[in-house]
Image 1 (spheres, rainbow, N blue to C red):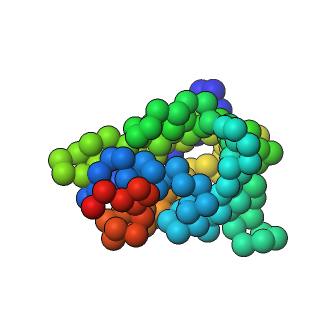
Image 2: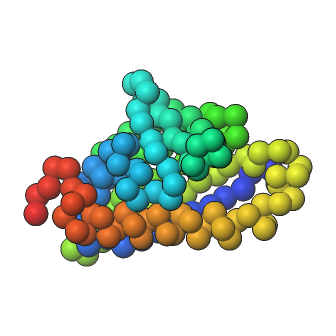
Length: 150
């Protein structure tokens, strides 16, 4: 084992791929759907996301490594606490879209983090699913699309 842990979630969204991708990559709007997270672009291909309620939380810095609108964004997590790779893929599905969010991470705190992952993983997975369900509701409401073609 390489010491990495994995988490992923998926959701079907009754909205077009282009609109869903635009909402996902509208970084300041992450607070509307991603659990306790605010995000912003801090430079060309550089993002910061803060998860938690200040001062209790953590900063996740990222570099966009692949950008293929309206279907794929890949990032490298480069922060002190969160390190690894993440992907969000949006594909057409029937009259709407399917969003798959996957992360391959190096758990913080070394051996202790890897040992605790089996306890933490169900919570992280549940929060990812919860966030994607919120994303779907926002996109389907018509309040999430930028630009909105509906």
